[in-house]
Length: 264
Image 1: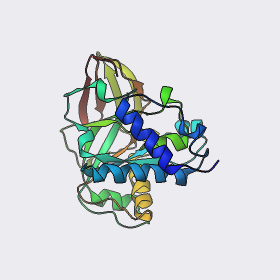
Image 2 (image 1 turned 60 degrees about the vertical axis):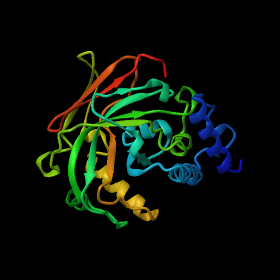
Image 3 (image 1 turned 30 degrees about the vertical axis):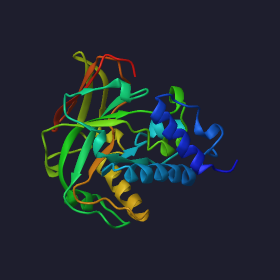
Image 4 (image 1 turned 180 degrees about the horizontal axis):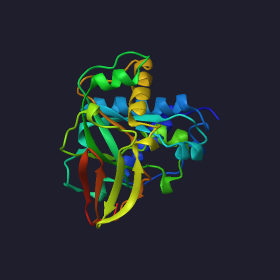
């Protein structure tokens, strides 16, 4: 099968516009395992969104869990981009009509104070470049029906991005051991997902270093002011209409994502 970059991008745009998820792209538009084609589709979407006036504000790392990587048959993370209109204020209601099949996960967000322009990036570089950290909830979503995704499906679909919520308690990276920071995601006062920084490529700092090096190699490095979602600290959870989810991350505080009662 030859990759149909334009066809795959158009299919995803149609899913966004109609609110109807489609069959996997690997079925008819993208060869299984063709990451270069999948990223080409993602970039085609990013270019179209920028032309529409959306503002690029950062990037996200996905597939940071070894268990999740093995389920896709890959042994590296992936990435997507963040736009300003994807950000939701802490505790504000998220309209499920704007999403298809959302799930939530707790993450550490990095806000950069310096550029990371080099292809060889160390953890020390990331520490120096980070202005502050925030607790975050990423609302992941998929334009592929039933979350029946492979690596090419999720990469093409902007790493299955939806929305994200940032907390309001900035912390300095030097004050925390991110590898050991525990996280719990609660619904109605009960934990629905638990994890720790070690589940995110061994440490969220490793995830950001990987992202910075990868984006620099692709000619679009991370810049001062960018927000980076570093990857899930625990399993993602399907959203229940009308529910509120609170992520508590040790040393970082908490953040809430609240959803409307209408169906996605």
